[in-house]
Length: 566
Image (cartoon, rainbow, N blue to C red; front, side, top):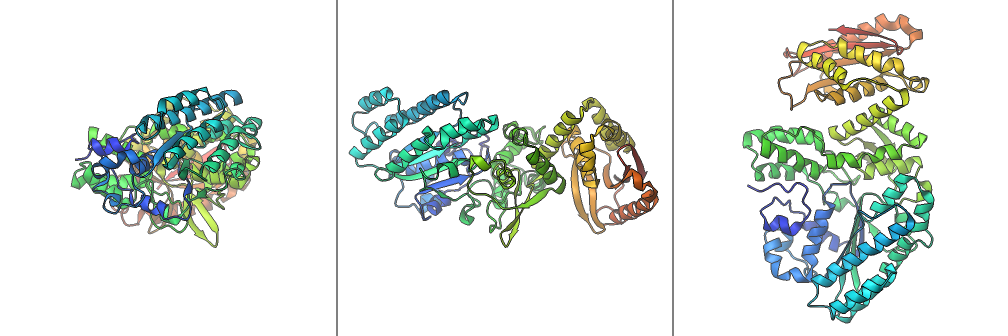
């Protein structure tokens, strides 16, 4: 039985200490065979980027040759090694955690980060480089970032070696600056004669001599356009068909993981269904066929299953959830906020994915939508004639959107309530089969307090999002939108959460909205709604169930409602 490497990104430690490792080494061969030696690759946070970089580091490191069989022997690349294995000195840079308080502090921490990485290289290759102590002292005295890079390039050139340059979190500091909304800070740093642009120009010069290969990762192509004239050599392979499954897990890999970490055979299908609904759904190339599971979230979930024999209390890892706090910053712009509400209502949008970002167009609609794609909040559903349909990938990401929607609604309409109120109302639905207290809570505390701005957008879909948002808070049900049945698509199906298996009732809910001025249509709409619910109820899998109740909710304007249990 393999140990679960939740939160780990050290390839060597995982291989030496008996942790699960999903073999992705065939992609080492694939990226070597691409047309460019200088690659740029984007994936959402906590998606396995750092582990893959650690794999590259161990494979190409000239000092790791003696450990090759131990680390790679039973893996794809161990059986089919490339000519370049163990042939490079590795220079690994990581630009997370830099001080972005102001330009000077960023420049200072950037320099320190580069120096620390070069010192790590000096320590690693003490037996190859000449006079590493002298080089270290020389670098210590230098205050110019580009001079530091040129110094190590010249020293490596003396011993006839080549460098494989790895850059992790290339965009971390830029994302922080953008989140602060400081356009001048960004422009002075990255654009024109900014020190970051100069740094990448120096790296480009290095490719003429000892920097033979470069692999850059981050979470967005945020600086790509702004760096283009200085660093126009990198090939963006983010949406390359052959690399769709390079990070994350395919379903076949998840099935194998369940076995390797010791999930009992009788429990595997149930766990797979749960993981599929919660964390699957990502597609990074429009031509790809296999969808991808978020690897961090799969391991987070399985860690709880293996250790405690039950799912985690919170189905989303806080490390992932915190990153999506950026959503608030991104929607300070009124246009973006309206666009996000539209995406939540429609559960997707048609758009073209932008592959290079320029700061000057950061708040354009297509840029904002593309950023949601790169962050993992939207994914590709399909693409026909270059028209791409983007959708919310899975249930967990939907809950992030619903929680965002609830917070915004609360802030903008000065809505106040106790969590205990919503919990009590939801528990009455679950254990007593009473839906009216929940609808009364929504009507009194939410709908009646909506502003005129909200009423302009008010329709059945808007009400549905409100219901989803507040059902998510209670953590009792798992609300499913448009569940397919023989009788059509159910507006809302409330499925018991697997963490509360003793819930007594699930619910079929049909929603109707009538403007106050059209109140005379209520009877006809009621008749249609009841008929629709009965059709759902007669469907396979629902007809014989006594634990499923159904209700028609008719909202008249924002002040009135009717609940009809069928």
